[in-house]
Image 1 (cartoon, helix red, strand yellow):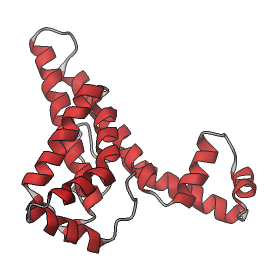
Image 2 (cartoon, helix red, strand yellow):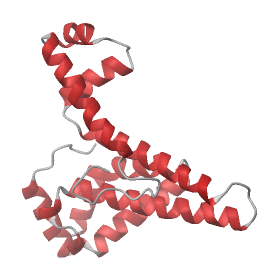
Image 3 (cartoon, helix red, strand yellow):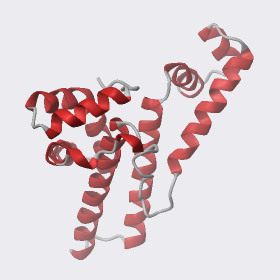
Length: 193
């Protein structure tokens, strides 16, 4: 499972190891981020085989181009997630455009709406998985268990003010998932995907 807060030092060392061609570094990177990559790709493409292909493409790209990652721009996790998103959206557009060319119904506008919805959903998943556990726990209780802030406070053993703060902050973070307009272009890799 991926670690949410990979230290920048780890990110730089990983990049250096990949640049030296250490196969073990690629294995370690894969172990840490494969579920993130596959999950984001599947969320955008809604297709297991396509998500498998994107996962291979992402790790191949990282292996062949480790110098593209700039630690000053943000965590390696965000760069990998943005790369995943970009490749998955590109594939979604290509398959959608091919379907349109074959007369498969729909329109360019419908395709772009689908891309935008898939992008927002993938960014929301990434944001939730990346947020600190206390925020995630409060949101999960409020959303999935339909608990109000008082019940959430009791469940978590915190004050009602703290429960409200966590819920507000978690919702503010989630509100950024809708990010850019219908073009589906994610924020640059220093931001959330």
